[in-house]
Image 1 (tube, rainbow, N blue to C red):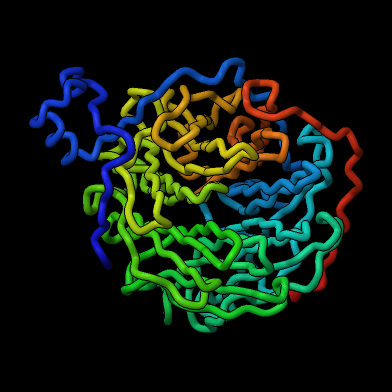
Image 2: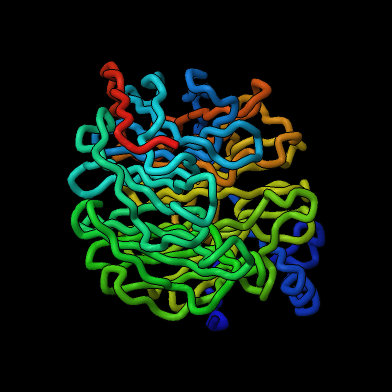
Length: 464
């Protein structure tokens, strides 16, 4: 792996507790660089920004008690789609994956359905929309034997999630453990799926692969993109027109966050670039091993690239963001987004870009001693608004693993939509909230009040 060439151009590293650091004293700056404590210039929240009362998405109709790890997508008509994992235990593996949709801005949700399957078990859902408005649902699937009959499955809907076509196998590994898949469209006729793989068994040696499809998800080809065998996980993707696609992931062994880029539609990839400032500074929490620095990545219409992740020391994890203005070759200094001084974990960041280029970021936050979702915005990724609480009830910290990620999307009118794993009712459910443009974000609200037709369930896939 290549050491990152760093361009100093982001936020300024300052201390949370030592005000003398603000003077720029060299000794203080050096100490803070070693500690990898990064703080962005945090301002006031945009006037009037608020999130509406939380709405439960999951309806309790499935035979599983715990629903975790949601992802949300919104189409140009502001129709919302959410996928999540169904499990028997709060921190255990997935059994199935579920789906619901809303045509009234998230005020009400369709009956929950379970997705078709190739193999017995499902986990790690992710959604994407292509340039024609077709909806794709990616997830991991596996049989009783983790290292056989297992891989990334993708379904496509041509009617806004009412029905789903056949399930496609998006990876080309037959004897491997795969983990943490994601899917993205470049809006130019290509789809990409990223995932971690361990060939031959679940060990600490593996890497990141990306599969690509040029026929709307019918067939897929795959290539390894990480430069060396690593304990890589959490591959996320950002893609745009012209075949440019970016990947980011976390290496649990080295404690680093890496990025890579393809400029030919995912056929070939460049050298991996580490973007955390200090080698090994991106580690899981010392008090909660489930609080991990899995990254999020987004590109703006003007070409700027941003990656967010959790970083800190011990159990004090902060959300940090780095910016690149040259396609991911060099990166500015990471800046801190959360504005608390609790010395507790913040993790599970999720990015979205608004129609005016505003960056939206949501994350899971333990600043109160219980879990909430917080949110902030930025115009440039260097200066962030004051944090706004999304949740109107807390999740007890006894749930050490309320999933591994949450979901955030922005509509064409500037509305921010957030979904997350929520434990307010004693189990884990998927909840939703939105911040409409009238609450301080840009754009004009145009919420549709159309009724949601029921989603029809099909079980064409093989069951175990």
